[in-house]
Amino acid sequence: MTADIAYLQTLQLPLEALDRQFAAQRAAYAANPMPPAAQRQQWLKALRDLLSNERQALIEAISADFSHRSADETLLAELMPSLHGIHYASRHLKGWMKASRRKVGMAFQPASAKVVYQPLGVVGVIVPWNYPLYLAIGPLVGALAAGNRVMLKLSESTPATGLLLKELLARIFPEDLVCVVLGEADIGVAFSRLRFDHLLFTGATSIGKHVMRAAAENLTPVTLELGGKSPAIVSRDVPLKDAAERIAFGKTLNAGQTCVAPDYVLVPEDRIGGFVEAYRQAVQGFYPTLTDNPDYTAIINERQLARLNGYVSDATSKGALLIPLFDQGQGRRMPHSVLLNVSDDMTVMQDEIFGPLLPIVPYQDLEQAFAYINQRPRPLALYYFGYDKREQNRVLHETHSGGVCLNDTLLHVAQDDMPFGGIGASGMGHYHGHEGFLTFSKAKGVLVKQRFNAARLIYPPYGKSIQKLIQKLFIR
Image (tube, rainbow, N blue to C red; front, side):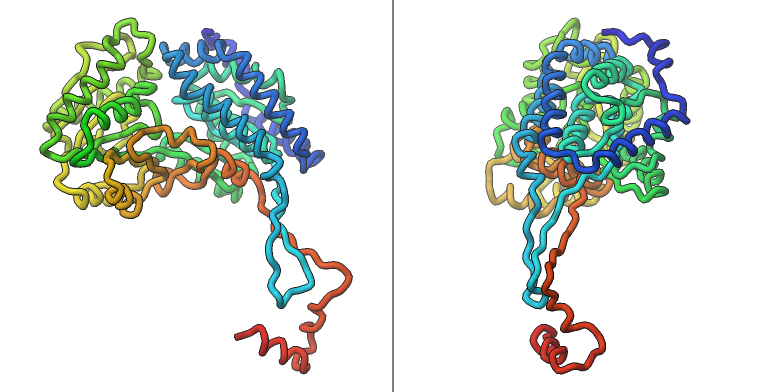
């Protein structure tokens, strides 16, 4: 599918229309503030059926936005986790919705306590361009499971996908339940300023600061899924083929345009040559050629391609050694390359790369590797390759990151029973699975008493004998 840009622009909401759409969702929420489980299940089933039936149209739209996106990567990294997430939420929804019973202290008896999980109201989701389907559907599933209304702002860099999602979701949901907002940066700014009950943003750390600042004006709680420089550590004794192949998969998927892609690799200094060769073999085994290769995804647009080429020029001008793994690219299919002799003054070592460039940093021992990571902003993901369990535990206890894979990359994100989220510069808050339901719910504490009220014993006037006895018993 190819987006008609002129038609797309006619669908862009005027700024004032955003307020009307938001008001319609607020009114719909007020009319149905606690949708029953059966209704939420129906919403999720309709979404699952839609994605399953329209998978080919979605594959084509995403590919059109990238100039070429591997159909298998869209199936693997967008459709499969979206469908699995819907299935998981549907299966566990009734249990999540049940009130959680809590204990009441002896001093406050007779009474009971519970936590009720109540929908927040209207949730805003700002979707990035790199996985425009999965990063729209994932938050949508959590928000709908929790009983909310949802407004999705799609990226202006994926117009074909945005237009298709707007049309598809309108088939199964009224706009006062789920709506897609299209438009350029000015619409995105206005969107982030709406008085949402929760706002989830996925994207660059620099933009996340602006989103959080806008949300703060309304005291809107935010979940920020940012990025940063996720490191991989290759141990001294792991087979290089094992580490190189798994890092190569994580780095080459979507041409490296993944928020949890390995951003750089720490390798023992005396193993760098062997790792580079093992890595070359792994990447070329995945992609024997770039020319007309349907498996290799392009860079999303010319602006991002120019940014990546700028990183290469800056690094090589400052002494880095560029090792291309292919002779040439094709269109925006940028050749994958390794960078050696990198230093902190290079832009490629300061900004999240988000593309097919892999810097390699030497280290002498694990203490030095940990120090290198811990001196920098906390990453969204950290990957360690080594089978020594003592060293694995050291990685978990002596580093900080949003998530960890031991001897793998990326796949922790697809585990529905684990939370996903960053820390510090890589984000705040969690979603996916049960954590998604909790993020988009208000956990409301409820204390219940009936006719008998023992608390009358502590009411003023103070100084009575029973009050003195209570103080002796309970204030120690």
